[in-house]
Amino acid sequence: MNAKEMPQAIKQPFDRLRDEVTALQIDWNIYSQLQLHSKERIELLGSMVGGFFVCVAFALRNDITMSIGRLLDPKETRSHSNLCFELLMEEIKTFDHEFYESLHGQYQEIIKKCGGLKEWRNKVVGHRDFRIALSQAGCSLPTVDPKEIEEILELIRSFMNTIEAYYQDSETLYEYISSTGDADDLVFYLQEAAEHQKCKENALRKKHGFLEKMEDL
Image (cartoon, rainbow, N blue to C red; front, side, top):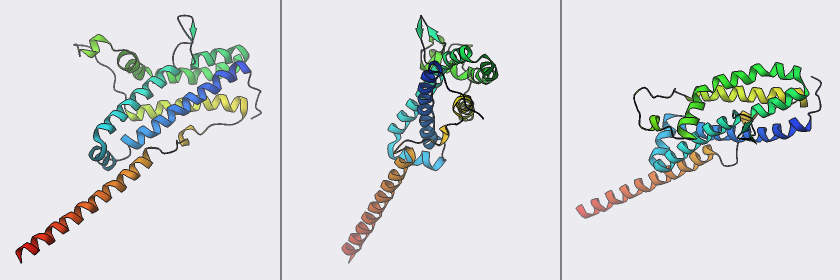
C-alpha cells in the first residue's frame, strides 16, 4: 500500500487515541492475567491477597468499561469537544470522503458491539441509575462476558490499524504491548512467597515433631 501523508487535523486526535487504546489494552491484559488465566491462579491470589485482588479486579473492570465508553462518546458534549472515534471520523470525512465511507462500516460495527457495555457504563460505572441500584422489577442490564470484551477490543484494534495502514503503511500490535512489572510478575513473586511460607511451615512441623519425640524419651 502507498501510504498517504496524514493531515495534522487527523494525526493529532489519532495519536492521542492510539495512546488511549494502548492503555486500554494494557488494562485488559493485566485483568486477563489476574482473572482469566486459570482457576489455580485465582485460588493463589485469593489465599495470598484476597481483599486486594478483589479491589484491583473491580477497579480494572470499571476502568476498562469507562475507557471503551469514552472512545464512543459523541464528538461534543455541551459545546465541549471529546477525544473519541466520532471526532476522528469527522476529521477523516473532511479530508478523504472515500476513505471515510470505507471505514464507516467498521466504526458502526464497534458501536453495535458495544451496546451492552455502554449500558453498564451509563447506568452503573459512569452514573448510578436509581432503578438499577434498587434492583426494581423490570430493570436489568445485559450480560457482558470476557469473550465479548475481547471481541470489542479486536474491532477497536482493527479500526485503528486500518487508519494507520492507510496513512502510514504500518500497524500497531496492541495486544502484545505489555507494561513493566505486570500481573504475571506479581503472581511469580506470590508463588515464591507461598513456597517459602510452605517451607517454613514444614520446617516448624518437623522441629515440633522432633521436640515431641525428645520429650517422650
